[in-house]
Length: 339
Ligand SMILES: [Zn+2]
Image (cartoon, rainbow, N blue to C red; front, side):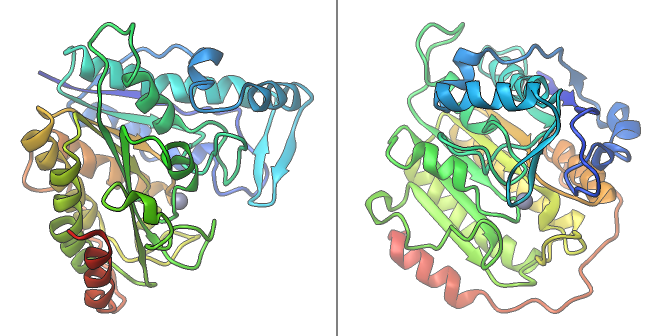
């Protein structure tokens, strides 16, 4: 079976001097044909599909704000334009198309290359460059009766964007059908994601806050020592990945230390865990990443992993910065969760 993808570049969702901009995809677009994956058509998500995560009053308010023209809706800053409501529906639709293709057997695995991103969007508010929580909407869809496949009972979301996915955590904080694991730089936006912040949901809500410079060595340990027991203990039927390439060492707005090889290693580990536990059912969802070369190389690394390649794309970009020792943090997180 094949690897599929969706592509939603939202060219009219743009704001002056904002890092979350259409040209994030400029180096990705010319490489899409080289990834050996099949492109799926996308339809906009329905408001009722969005409302499985977001308050209908928020959806109505956002539609109204967008209709009135460009606006900044939070201090991140998160912007909207006249096209942003439709763009956000199409971005969520891009993730739904990928997830449904994997669950109904049309595809082996998938990557939704979409913007605007989603993981900061909470049930009651859009924030952090995000309008609707694309990954959370796809997870809720897969849990529902009435789809073209039997509803799932357990889904894991793994988020390796450089920022904590506060919106995804908020959506599933008390939903025992969904587990959430986030690795992120500690001390930056949005300020949440400390490892002890969900004591009622040990082993299910797992936060891995990291020091500046944490890179390929640290993430390899996290993949082996935290991702693996997290997936083994939760036993999901589908893994969704919030893939943010802002964890690359030269991202312009963050200070982590991954390279393209590191993104391949992490993604391959997740694909292998999906093979072991979920019949290979895994869907990657683009979140952040603000350097166009990192987005293109990161996407190439994910497609290599989805196709089972032991090596990533030819991008020799190791971090030039020293990496702090994360042993103490990894040990305290494992102790907290009993992994
Ligand atoms: Zn991010």
